[in-house]
Length: 314
Image 1 (cartoon, rainbow, N blue to C red):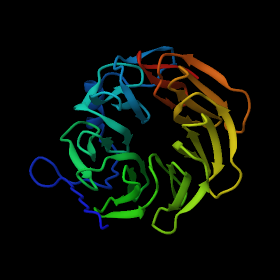
Image 2 (cartoon, rainbow, N blue to C red):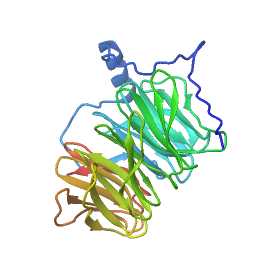
Image 3 (cartoon, helix red, strand yellow):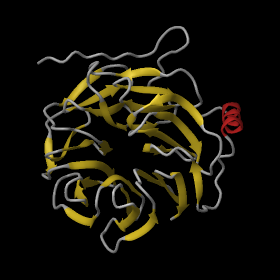
Image 4 (cartoon, rainbow, N blue to C red):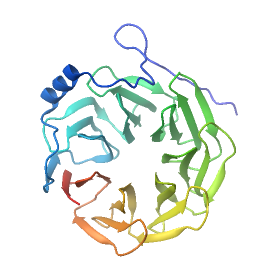
């Protein structure tokens, strides 16, 4: 059945389309941003609370800030300095599966509006960036220099060019959820495994046939993913090849990677942990009730749980 497609880009009074803008930050804007959001300058990592919100289900980051949204109960979509401080709120009373950020905007897959929404990172109007149907909810979001990619809960994967057009990359992908980019490929999880397709469009290939694959991320030509039934944290080459199970948890629902390790939040195991990307011993980093997401940078790892958003040294 032909799907009704809507792509709404803000234009006119009060908002305008700025897709694909990649200008260097103006010094006066950066100074204003720091004064409004608090000191975001790098500092030695210490164990501390970053934000008090207890329903965070999705995290994103840039060099200085954490961006968050709530999946399990309505809350603000906001950002907060990694060192802690005043939050900049983009939207209130929202539920979202995923949050992501590029140079200029923060995006979230709104369960409330059933659309990809976005707002300028420095504050401004919230606009509908993309919607495939009034009854279809978007899930994971990924970026490259040309487009934004997302999955929806009608088992489709989409590409939104910064110029404004919306293209169907893949259909009949059962419960397509999280999306990632690596080299020429778009990668996503389904209840049949991990699939990929060329970012510019083309045939879909199953890379790992595994029931209940859920979270997926990529790093250096390798897909890292979780299985909601077995609790696996696994890796598979983007090009295809052997799948290696790195660790097993109770319900690992969020992954992050750095140059050496894979980190995960185990929602029902009440632990944040890591394992070397090459394989090895698991290190438990934090024991906390209901960790739902994790992020990592050069100094710290960050995790959201029922106690709020916190950080600790790696």
